[in-house]
Length: 67
Image (cartoon, rainbow, N blue to C red; front, side, top):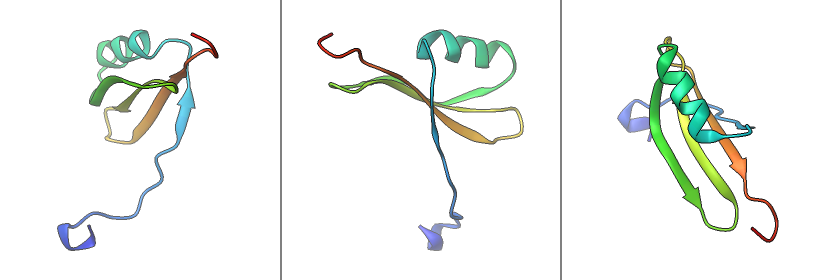
């Protein structure tokens, strides 16, 4: 990865109430979606977003147990 010019980064997950709603809000406010919402079986739904300056963040809505 270093050979490709990638630098070490931290990309934490932040729990949100509704990933899809948050992604729509990010786009409306000028941010970008670098990975659209997707499901992780038995875990929840996540996406990767970026602010207008390019800082990225993972967002996730965890599945409710038994759902």
